[in-house]
Length: 461
Ligand SMILES: NC(=O)c1ccc[n+]([C@@H]2O[C@H](COP(=O)([O-])OP(=O)(O)OC[C@H]3O[C@@H](n4cnc5c(N)ncnc54)[C@H](O)[C@@H]3O)[C@@H](O)[C@H]2O)c1
Image (cartoon, rainbow, N blue to C red):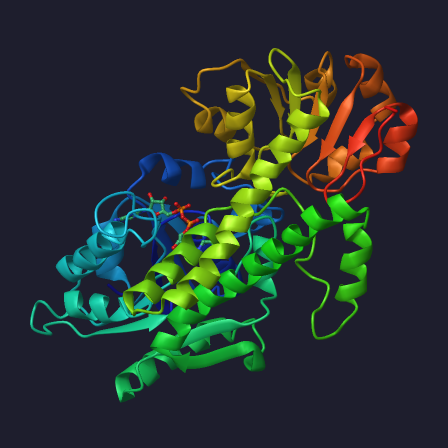
């Protein structure tokens, strides 16, 4: 089909990655027509509405600026494939929950269905871009599916993993540390790679566009997430030691973060990492290592996930022991449910584990969060316990025995804690799973304060 646009770009999968990434490409490249399709009609309707399905600072403005001009959201996948020159595939690749590799390997069913759909609907040559995070050698499987019709249509498969972080997606997409593009080292593979590079070159400086072979590109995404999660587990393991030794994790973090070989980022002790990616990608890496007989390597990376589970369990255990070994019928208020600030995403949020454990202890829960209450309700649907959801933190905290800070939302730093303290049952406890509040001040107000990785401040003898 002839259009006024230089190229037609399609993205299959309108999720946390597909939506914002395509919005940025459309915003930066008015010469391209960018269409994002999804099998979920509700999601597409939300992308076409005033309330987008993904909350990201700055995203609304970008989408509103280009939607209907060169950015489109649709459920017509077949038409989208037929008309496209370049197809990004950004479908979900969750951890497999059944059969071989259950709980470890990536579930590639959505991926394979997409590959077959592309094959079925394509009439002209296309570049297929892996945007989803995938096990190494998935491009090979993709190629095998795409050549099932005896090469009637030519496809080049590229790997272009996404490194955006939720909460800062727009910033990350606009100013990425790097864009990674992996290809086959064939003439046509290298030419396809250059076409993709040309898109990013519209706004990303050339030196930040990293070109690589396809297998290294696929593996790099898993390794990047494994390294990031490893830093969190490393500092969290030390937070446990700090609590036993009266050392202060903030001082340890500062001392090691100044070492330029270590660096200061991703060193905040907390209740542990969440999000849809870290755990699944590490387990995927672990599964790959075991597949290749590298059991020691697999054990090493698996321990990053184990420490994360330990940290979440420790948080609840600390609450239990501090509150006189019983939480039954006590009202506990969770400040935040999202897995991190500035997102409504609750996938793998530590909040889910913590809420369920507290309910097992027969606590009554009140959950407050500025963006994630809808998802929180879905996550705890069917859980047998007393849970209420209140957006206003003052109202949520009133009448509670304890507050647990789960998400590092900025609003929690600015609350009137004197007012909150007055409204709570005494002795009032606060457990800071993110170390975001002023512990000394809260102690002076009257709270018994339990930070992460620092000595507790209590009014008990
Ligand atoms: N969320 C992140 O921060 C992040 C960051 C980097 C990479 N990734 C990776 O990107 C990929 C997508 O992640 P996400 O968070 O955007 O997932 P998501 O679940 O938010 O979105 C995936 C979308 O794909 C759609 N889909 C599934 N099968 C389809 C099909 N056959 N045809 C059309 N649409 C289909 C789903 O309906 C869903 O809307 C994953 O591999 C993930 O690991 C995610």
